[in-house]
Length: 272
Image (cartoon, rainbow, N blue to C red; front, side):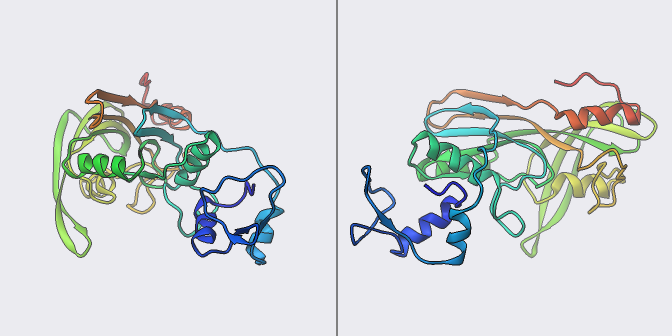
């Protein structure tokens, strides 16, 4: 047992035949008995992982689970995927470790995007078939996603933002609907619904409209000292479970750090 080792790293060792038991190449699903010895490759990285101090498993806030689906609440600052700067901790590895420790053997993968600084529910599929079916829902626009965003300036009423956004070398149409929940002289709290899923869609379109998000350095938003991240939270996911046909309606409360900031811009709203 190597608690500090990422699941993907161990999987690669098995795939390359680097792990053996009883002088035979071992497979990831081999059963071991008490007293069995295994041989590991002599590598600097593996030595570091073997002797890394054990830490408690990071908490997962599970919002919904079925046989095929797992939905967890992602905190701001945690990447969904492994990448540069996020090799040791990311949401996918946390979910994989949680399921592995529970004894589940299927592979799990996220089927949606959520920016690093954005908080809210993330949908994972259990196994390839589940991921494929859930991925279709997003591709076909059958998942309703509602966000809360705090923007600079006063916005009233409701409306649509429609524009072309660069995506993979092409311009693609992006549509976002908004409704102002409450406004002050310096800020507006919006409920936002995405109709398309372009990268940074909400952030780009609101900045282009002259109302950048609070905390959004990339798109020239106001960044007060008492707000440590982007004020954008996915509060709701609604879809039809392709397996059970149940209506799934997932709500994620606004995180405490964002709630605490609202009165500082004269926004007083009771948000669950």
